[in-house]
Length: 100
Image 1 (cartoon, rainbow, N blue to C red):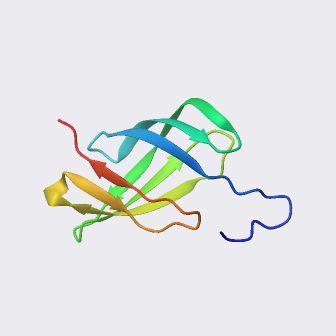
Image 2 (tube, rainbow, N blue to C red):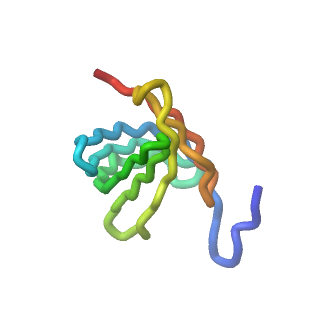
């Protein structure tokens, strides 16, 4: 575990995200999760923007009220049916699958 620094406490958590991409550079998502310290959290509604590149890399920028803007980088795989999230400053591991 990395040092948290003065006044910062690290927390392990698990969550489920349902993200809907609109095909025009925007998305909405709902996050349900539970932290080891904070306990269960209510569903959090998030929106943001995304961009996809010809080399199958993509960037997602989440906008959550009261929280600094978060940028997540990913790689689109399986002919656009899935994506993998790249390493982040805070440990986030993700796998996503397209649902028709």
